[in-house]
Amino acid sequence: MTTTTVTTWPLLFTYSGPIIGRGFFASVSFCGRLLATQEPEGIWLDGVNPGALAVGGATLDNANHELRETLTKVLVAYASEAKSFDAFKTAVERFYHETDDDTVAEWKASVDALKNGLLSVPAALRRKPDDWTCHVLVEPKRIEDLTPHDNQVCQNDGDTTLAKAA
Amino acid sequence: MSSFGTVSLNEVRAMLDACAPGHVFRQHGDHYYLIAYKGLTFPTFPRGAHGKSNPEIQRGVVKKMAKFFGVLPCAKRELALT
Image (cartoon, each protein chain N blue to C red):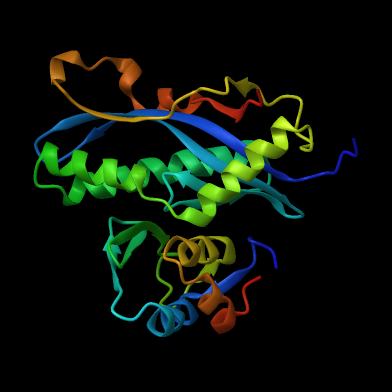
């Protein structure tokens, strides 16, 4: 079998954090999907879920940091506009689920390339099981349930891994 | 062409007028514009550097946004994206 170098990786990532809205606290967590492309200037990340997202960085760590900054900022933007927790929840779920067919097809092709041993990937990227399911969860939080761990600075250790080949 | 190259916001707005007629383009929080078209919403379009009326936007974001809305072929013609 001939191995070719394909530089688009199917990544899974986790994100969680507290968001303060107008009169509500919310906890937002999700496992999302990304396509990571290696370019001469760095790593570019295109969102699969959420789909309306694209960031880049000189390294995967830099791009990962930009991803989390962007997610937090857009969630805060939604919280600023939402008149209620329910409105915020609806907006975040919609943001997570909306994507486009072309990007989903690229994701599937990238996973197939990984399964067939055609992807050259960094050794440091861990792999997730083939049946790993991604999700979004938006829950109200009471102030008495908050802990120092909920501070956003503690959320930057979110996980980014490679979607595993079977 | 690199995702890290840039195109001006004015050029992107002109592309959207040509390729996504009837789209909505409005501020979304302190850092982003929200673009809506045909029932889909792209809420992470960057506003660019503070104080700039026509900031530069990374091509990768523009390309992703166009693909998201299903107008990438038109956007490629208008902006020479690859």
